[in-house]
Image 1 (cartoon, rainbow, N blue to C red):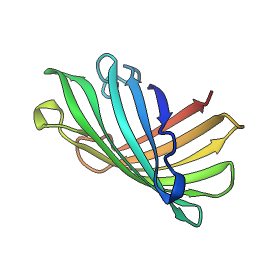
Image 2: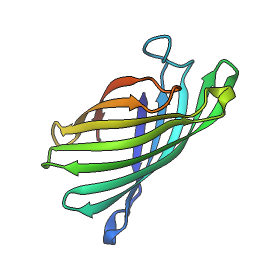
Image 3: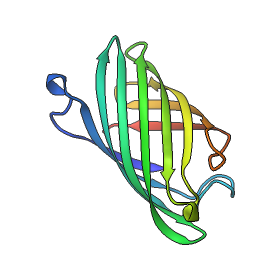
Image 4: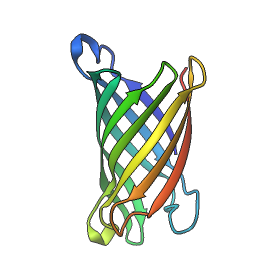
Length: 152
C-alpha cells in the first residue's frame, strides 16, 4: 500500500480529537489468494482522543474502491483502536478492524483483531509491525504486516 496522510490543522487542540485524512492505494502484491486485483484506492478519516495516562482511542471510518470476480465495487472500512505510548519512541496498540464491509456477492464483510507496535526511528520516520487474527471465515486466519512511514 502507498499512501498520504493529511493532519487537519488545529485538530487536537483544547482537548478535542486529533483528526486526519488517509489516502491510500493498495497494490496487487502478495500471494494469489490475498493480493487483490489491480490498484485499489481508499480514503479514510481518522479521529484520535487522548485518554490520559499515555492512552489513546482512535476511530477510523472509510471507503475503498475494490476489484473482484464481479468487477469493481465500493466497500466500507471501519476500525477502533486503543493505543499506549510506553516512551517517546515506542508505542503499542490493539484494534478491532473491518477492512472490508461489502455484500456477499463482493466477498462479504471481513473482520479481525490486530495487535501492533510502532517505533520512532528519528524525528521523521516510523517503523510499524502488526499481527492480526481473522474473526470470520471471510478473513485470513493469521497475518503479519510491517510498514515504514516518513514525514516531510
